[in-house]
Image (cartoon, rainbow, N blue to C red; front, side):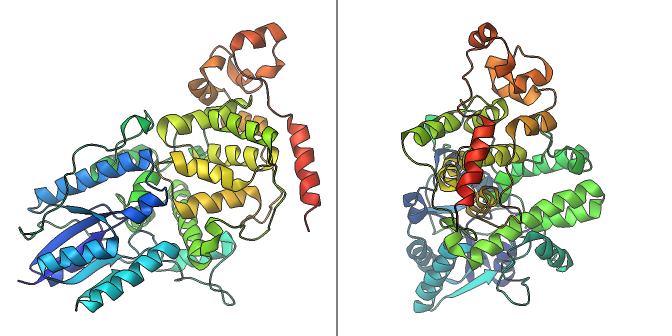
Length: 458
């Protein structure tokens, strides 16, 4: 009997899964395998929120496979060692894998290929599964990657996508291969209380609901903080319970300005991947414009603590930071505001904020997170690196009635309308009764400090 193995990584779904389709087409039986990578856990990426979401995804993937006569095999340890062990147990000739990006994925693939070939087995890597356009597929004439989004997007739109494939009807798995227990979410009390459920079923239910009403208005509503009208697909894209290829095809068939704006966001996701694939050091080091005079010391540390806890005295910033802790997610516009406040108004190193986001975001994606932080901080791909987002004017623009603020900052629930964005304008006695902190910095002072600091840069 010819057996193949499919290694699932960040593609935890059955719909539009080319490695699984190819393995089923070339073998009599298939071993669907997921390895809990000890290296990922040791590096700190297995945070409580992502661990809990991952447990949901694995349980749901296993359930979907069982409905088709199969099951998911889960092991823990070194990826190359565990894959080779399972391949030997099943006598699998081939291992199918979705392509990755970044330094770690490349090293994992190299080690896995070498280990399998040493045993007379073959690794087959499939393109464009976790991203719509693989890194390196579109490049400018004089470089290995695009450093600016707009020209990248123009080429990205012209790239023909592979067709999306349906979920298999039946999966046969050899009886001899065993795995670990999948029960429990695995994160305990440390996960955010409002963390959403993971898994392909939850993803596709969200997709169906959003396509009915949200997509058409996406271009007009995705920045509305109170409306919460974004797709909330980010965690599902991160874990691969939704296929970006399928999303692009479906959005283009739907058509309209909302669909175009939505697809543009998927292009941003691919843009960041091709930057990080070409410049892996950008996960830690300034990508373009270097800044080494960030604020440090006790005062800066106190400001960072207030920012993390949602106690800065700026309501829209505090609302967003509290949403992050409660849900493991934050609205995209709010991410821009909170990042600008830390990196430019407080002038604290973007890496401090990026680490906090990775600690809490269930969609904590290295490329998107790090490079969006660099974009805001002025060290990355933004063509206007000195722009500073004012949290008061931005709050009034994207939360004009103050509903988002009141939802997450209950101390201000009694303030009507846009007054919720400027509680410091209340009489002193009324301010004290709120129990809400004073502003940790005056915006004018923060802006002046930022401009002076940047003016000293070489």
